[in-house]
Amino acid sequence: DQGIDDNTIVIFTSDNGGAWYTGLPHLNRPFRGWKATFFEGGVRVPFFLRWPGHVAPGQRIATPVGHLDVFATAAAAAQAPLPHDRQIDSVNLLPFAQGQRHGPVHEALFWRSGDYRAVRVGDWKLQVSENPERMWLFNLAADPYEHEDLSAREPERVRELRALIEAQNAVMPAPLWPNLLEG
Image 1 (spheres, rainbow, N blue to C red):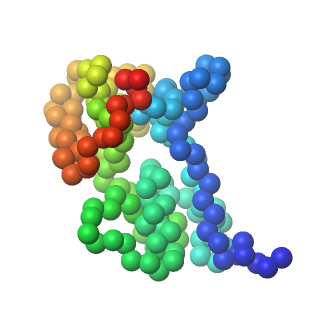
Image 2: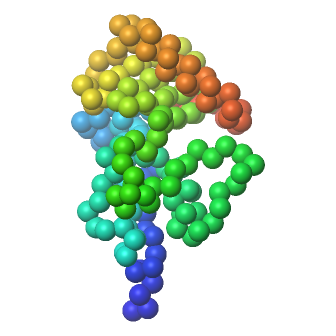
């Protein structure tokens, strides 16, 4: 009645894919994986943003975004500056949602849980686990359900993507707990 909904950003999302312990074995089908993994079934979630008068209904951002982007987006909407004393891994989504910017939101998206890490650059995604030692490389354009691990056939791409993971990890604080996959 007060019109608050006309001046409020509402974001609907989920923190991860469905959990394996629900007793629903095909919960994230057709995607592989679940909560605590970096397969698409664990990281591909809905993300809806509504802000009447600022974002027209039906707008789409065609490339992946991350939950961290909520921070820069909310700060921009509130006209609040981002901190300058640290690296901020967040992008303001409003110019994309308003059609003012196009193209990829991120050059790369990263995930990390202990020594289990992943990066996505364009349609390529590499996952690396230290314990157990394992890696997976997928071309999501050709294989969105991650059935065919290409890591043995694409060693140069693995090296490039792994270098991105290592560079990103070098500027992050040490993990506070072991990864959930290991657990």
